[in-house]
Length: 64
Image (cartoon, rainbow, N blue to C red; front, side, top):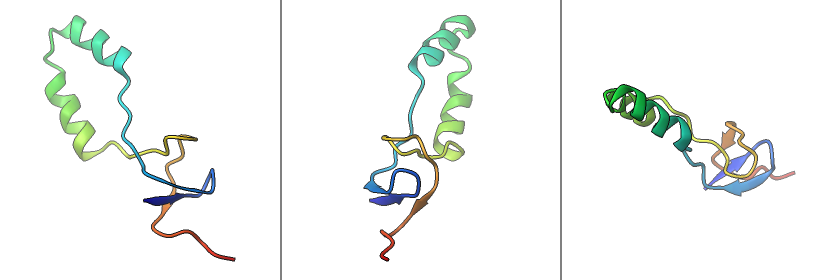
């Protein structure tokens, strides 16, 4: 669990996939781009807050 600095809650950050773009590009490229997307998703895509979409987290809830 991480603390989101934007919505001020303890949350579990998630990596979201845009399924519309995923299907559209797979259709037009015949699936060849999926290899590159997998590398991007697992190595470079940052997790976001499922509530507000923020990318700034703390490991603890600040007190005070």
